Length: 349
Image (cartoon, rainbow, N blue to C red; front, side):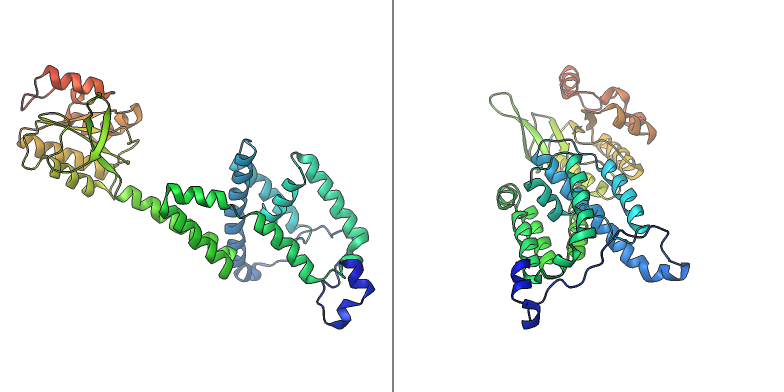
């Protein structure tokens, strides 16, 4: 198309071309920026950093998974930081883990640093000898090349897989993709990050809960945590699917109270298999719950307590109030203690 553009003088008949391009090697040195320029470039810098961090990490992760390779985001960020420092001192564009350029290298079979060395040598040759021919390249042709690469980045199978596994994540993916197309990449990435964080916070605020029961084949099942559901007569094993902290402590207390209201429960066991930590508010809630249950003659016990969680329970005084003898490493030990005591009301360690 460059040859056609030159031969038929397409620029003279209204076809827009790339136009004049700077040639030669870049000039090296510190950028001419004063403290007065900082307010002008700060927001742009923050926007660029946001796009670079999110886009580069997503691109690296996607191609690492595609080729079953290791991925260390910290190494990528150090490399990007050094590259951007070099870019600042040579007057070039900011450096990003570009999905389109990564797709170009990947489709060409690049699998090692040699591909980057060859790319650098080609870029050097273009800067020194080919900027004049490239100036005649029609913009439409350049846009078509980038568009074709962009189309190849659309993972239809991946979207279908997400849709089959989680409608909420599929809706999020479509919404952010539409934002990128109709508004901009920066806005789309920021929106995706914000919505993902909100979804994560919501999961922590109202996590999944369940009562553990056994089926006829002696397998553990999770059923909805509803009043009247019990693991076996006199025993309720309550599973809480998140760390216990200030945002979900009240929800935790409400769920446990519902499970013992109007029932003959004598042991309430908190299965802490999904918990890795507990904060001050969560600890206070467990202590208050233990005192409330004890007044009703119900024993509160904890099972599947990891060493790290046990340290937190000790730190917040939960172990002392509940009793070390009622905090178990495994559910089997907890059930053994329940059966050994005959589920007697008022049992304490």
